[in-house]
Each structure stands twice: as structure tokens, then as C-alpha cells.
Amino acid sequence: MSLSWPPLVNWNTPAGKLLDHLIETLEPKEGGIITVFGSAALQLVVDEGFLSGDVDLFSDRDLNEAIQTAGLKKGQASVCAHFCEELTFQTSPKWKDRAYLVNRFGVQIRIPHQLDILISKLIRLEPKDLDAFRTVRLRTGHPTESELTDELQIAVDVLRPGFDEEHGKNPIENVRILWKELFDHSIDVHRQIIIPAIARRRGGYERAQGFLKAELRSLSKVIHYSPSKQKGQGERDP
Image 1 (cartoon, helix red, strand yellow):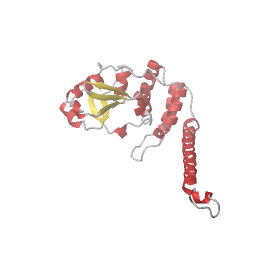
Image 2 (cartoon, rainbow, N blue to C red):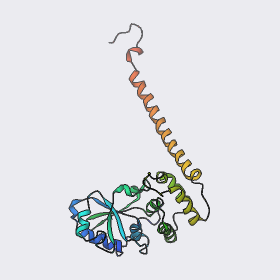
Image 3 (cartoon, rainbow, N blue to C red):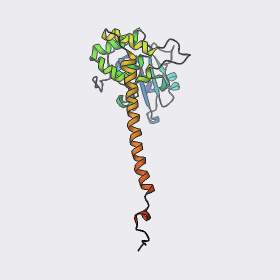
Image 4 (cartoon, helix red, strand yellow):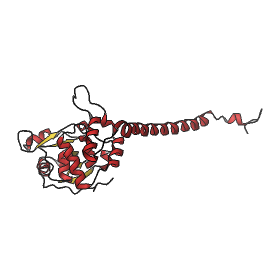
């Protein structure tokens, strides 16, 4: 699924300007990748009309000091940088394979595919998250119903219920709400997404197990092969 990918990044947006300002405080030689996700990422690559009071990002280096130095922490700027753990971004396991990586003034910026941004919004699905689905579909024509069904089978783990302390999170119900809003009909989440996802996984496991058993049988033949058993009775080595 291309969805107009790789994108044309609009750096002249509030999120783009914030990132440029943050980059000014960083030493490029420090390396690492900064990943931008959430609505700010959609603002960069889909529609500058996506509003976000903070720019969610994570990195393999600590950016808290740089954010403080740049005056981008909450309360310091109208649009602030929100430094998160990578685990905050719960989406498809394929997201890193299709994310867009761009060098911006010596710093690597990674922008997840817009589909992966949308999938991550299913966990919460507030009104603004529904608006994000509508806007992306309006701008790109994607995801279609079949595309979203297939991708949710792959990303089925995002539909697991939250921990006890994460009250109010019901991703399965959120998928039902989304289907009515986007496609104007209901969906049987268990039958159309969860059960096929489990079947796909079991099929993969069974193929892997079958291959492993075949390899073990082949190895067993080599290990138990004895040249002496192939010689005739009483036959000596030359």
C-alpha cells in the first residue's frame, strides 16, 4: 500500500518549525534518530490543518535537556515538544519497515506511515482521532475497508484490552465505532479481524515447525549414519 509514499514533508508547519528549532540545539555528531508520531506527523505529511498542541516524539537519545534549552517544554511555548518512550507508539509491527527517514540539517528525522499513525489512534479514538481518519481518507482515498481490515489483522495486538490502570480503553469497541463512521456499516471484529489474524499466525507457526522438523530429520540421518554398517560382514578397511 503506497498511500502517496514517500511523502513530501511540509516543514513550514508548526510541527516542522518546532523540529527545526529543536535541531538547532542538537549536536548532529551525537547521532540517533528522532521519530515524530501522532497528529503532528500527519500535519507534516498529509494536511497542515491537523492541529496539535504538542509534537509527540521519541528517540534513542535523551532529548529532555535539548527541549528545555530550546524552550519547547509544556508551558514554555504554544506548541511544545512531548518527549515519550517508544512504547507509547502502539501500532503495526511493520511500522519501521515503511517509515520515512529524512536527514534534516544533519539530524535523522523518522516519520511513520500515515496508516500506522491512524492505527495507533484506535487505542483511544477520541473525536479528533476520528477526524484524523476522515481527513486522511479525504486527502488520499485510503485506507479502504479491505486495506484497513488486512492491516488490523497484522496489527491485531493493538486490539488487546488495556491494563487495569488504563481504564476506558476498549480498542475492539473503537473499531466498531470507526467502521460505522467510515464505512457506514457494522463489523464483526472477532470474525473479520481477530480470528483471521490468529489463523495467519498459526499458519506461520505450523510452516516454521514443519521446516524445523524436516531439518531435524535430515540432521538425524547424518548423525546416525555409520560407515561401518555399510561394509560387509568381516570386511576390513584397506
